[in-house]
Image (cartoon, rainbow, N blue to C red):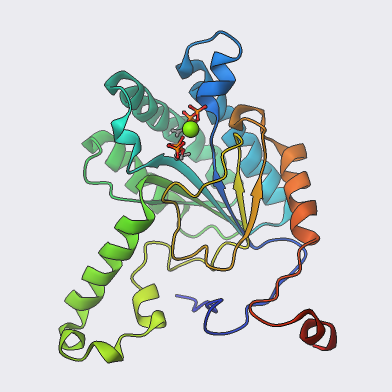
Length: 253
Ligand code: IPE
Ligand code: IPE
Ligand code: MG
């Protein structure tokens, strides 16, 4: 496994194209309601936006794309909406794995998968296995994911693996804990995008967003695509990523 530089312990390389883009795909419901359609129509259209965005990211040379598809809090939604979202997930996996694979895309799913039905878990495992050797773009779907869940499961996993740390907690380092986070295979996101106009994290990648650039757009997720992605990247390019330093230090570096 590749070791990545942590933005809080050392200085990551910043480049004009973000290596890792993480997106909160929000606004499906409002997209539908504004057209007098049922919410599910927005979710169905949202799946299409996933396809075009994945393609656009691969073309732009982005190495990691992480999409928040279902949060640990989304179980609070009406049961019929939750089951529709699950069915859409199953359908998308069945339909898209072949073309993801053909396009050199590696699929990963992060989150607590235990509550999912066995059929969905099997599809995820098969999809991950089939695409495991692909290197063009790593597409991560966060499903039943919560940033707090992730930090907690990483802490438990670290202590299970190295029980001696419990007796001497001063030995616990950022790097040691990071290895147990569910996205330890990826660098931290360079660019965070949230569609739908809300300006919040909603319990997405809490640990990993420490130094990520944030971009919020009013565009509803079903309307997101290559053009909106390019706008976000243009905004990203205008940012000065100081990682704690001064502008003067960056100018002379
Ligand atoms: C995002 O769209 C999809 C999920 C959270 C699963 P929403 O369903 O949250 O859409 P809005 O925010 O109600 O418009
Ligand atoms: C965040 O969207 C989760 C996903 C996009 C999967 P929500 O629509 O659930 O977020 P809140 O509830 O408005 O914060
Ligand atoms: Mg929402």
